[in-house]
Length: 274
Image (tube, rainbow, N blue to C red; front, side, top):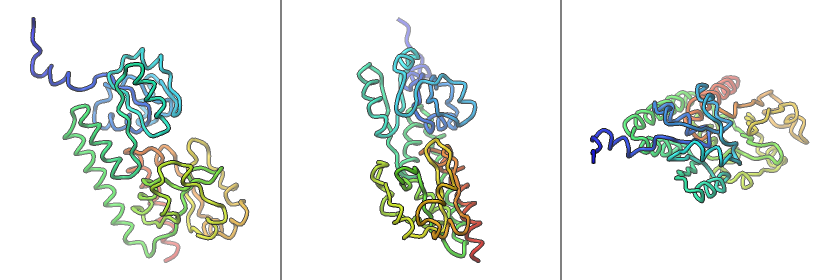
């Protein structure tokens, strides 16, 4: 009987056929240089654009189990309580699933470190994390020069109104803003971050950032809400749409493109007040 060489044995320790059910794990594997391991992706995966050529096997809440099984993955990567039922079914069908649930910037970095370990790219993972942290530090240092920090309301959904999840609120702070609903940031489930129209008016945000989970933001509809004409952000024309692919994916995109987009907006608003 032939024996595996040391290099072959080391390679066999790591999964070779990976299905990614959300965008951020796909992007992370590409950044680690391990895109060849990806055999299936979410229909919503968009980063990087090269990933779009991979077989699409799921939406966010639903998955094509037969298509996933046909790809013969040795690892499936899932995310959040929303995909809990998908994970349960995949496990029933005999697949190995790593289910992430990152909700903060620190947890996003932990996800990257864990995924790097899973594919044997620990040093590359550390380098990626250091690069992301350095970028956040540079943004924070630039924001520290603002004459003041604008009050910010982030809207994740419009009916009902849902305020920003933890990593989004943290990135607003890194970018130079003050979230107006800081007490809700650690509520991982969207239904626990529902806010009242009148309470947003009472907190008078100077900037409104909106990203409605896959549908276009209607800024005119935001401005037309009862009583919202008196909100500073509406009066001064500071209602903005943020690209969901850049901010609502708890992965590298939010820590790079997302935070830069928010920082650029807040820099303009802060400069106006000088």
